[in-house]
Length: 475
Ligand code: GLN
Image (cartoon, rainbow, N blue to C red; front, side, top):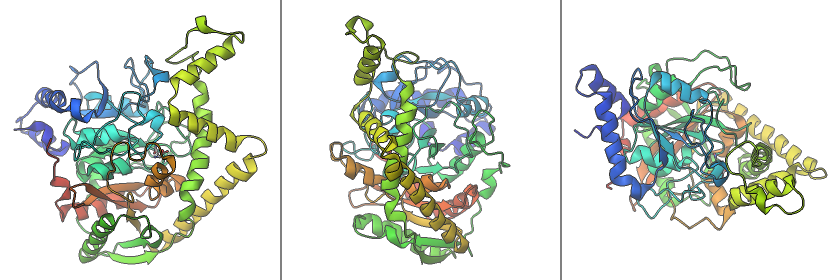
């Protein structure tokens, strides 16, 4: 039996009846990686401790290369962090080690999570397992590709503007961005602190609920973590959507949406209606401003968060032997010039600009006000519906190289996902079809803050009535 091709809940059933052991599963997953990762390149590096299998449920998991893991090299796929070994575990890593056991490796990502294609990694691109000439999405593209290519059973990603959901959509798997504050970000290397959230990428909705049970919960070391009771998310896997009110965002179905994505998403809407949900069209009038708002708020926070990478405390230091006359300043400059890639430099410059005196009010402050308007639109919408539905991304996976030199078109990849980050609400992407070229399409559902259970319930019901999640790429 190919253990790597099963879901985590199937593997746990095998453990219960002693038909498989964690050692066998790990061995199988590692041999799968050995066989195909030279073509997919989902991993930045494998864990140095792959003999560890003492976890309670012992499921192999890939961790995005931006979550601190004690004594492992963690780099955010950036040259500037090469050689950095965190002296502690991120809260989620701690929880994984206590509960799930086996960290297989660290998934490739866009440098510092800036991107939608996993092409800006200092290790080179990750390729989409459905079509190796295409991107897997990003920035958690390595995590998504590893899951769909059966190079892990579970993965963790981070999502600042869509980085869990958009790659889940491009790779045909489930990706959940939890409510801001639901999962501790202690030990997550920060991109934009008011938007970042960690979440699961999995093969199906049940696995997503199980992984949420492990990672969700209060942590006093993250001041934005919220002390709300954590439900058993597997109890939300109720096969029934009768009476659930779904709002379909009219602004999402306009120019720019690929015709095949539209057809697949409309098919899903029909299916949900047949299953008894009430569907109505809603408007989020400020949604068209989400991308612009995001690129002000997110770059401002990124420029500030990345100031700490100066050659003194972490990773790369450019040799003081080359120093010109300014001493320390030369070292900072050289290190940052050599250490950061183009997109990181672009974001630092944009962010520094919108925060600078004279422009702060015109850009940053105004951006924050529009953010409030976007959140208010959602509050209004949730007065009349339980779930808000859009496509996850406007297109299916694009070609490697297609958008890398056109940042604006790359930024538009997140046109539907950014809203949930700006408002702090949970959102999920689930598979809802394939294009004629055989590329997966994702459906996005958003819910009220801390109502991940609603997302899981609707997703589960839809999934149980479709077969998209059972399809596998042939590699
Ligand atoms: N693609 C978006 C960006 O480039 C979102 C990235 C993310 O969620 N980390 O910023």
